[in-house]
Length: 145
Image (cartoon, rainbow, N blue to C red):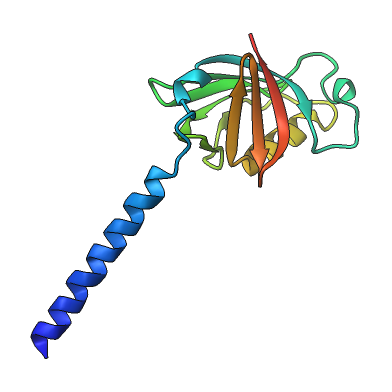
């Protein structure tokens, strides 16, 4: 009976190991996180009924990616931020807290930007266009600077 239990545990471990290897292999071959490197300026966001230029009348939000060091920094259109870059293939995650300056900001732009970032789960790059998606729908678009 003891040998049967040990054999069952070993077989389960083998099946789990095979399954996790298969999932890793399904990451798109075209996803190259190094293409994120550099500064990207926001030019489209879907999370608000307010016109884009009214959300960001003085300064558009931007993100600078340092893929080598695993860091990001940028501005929200008002305050500056910095944090860790969490990317794996075309999966990207902004749920880690960002260090953020605390100047008083007019309007909703900063809140809309930060809340939208938290919902992003994947990205795609087409030339000088970076798209952030949430559940397969583009929610933010940036242009390379």
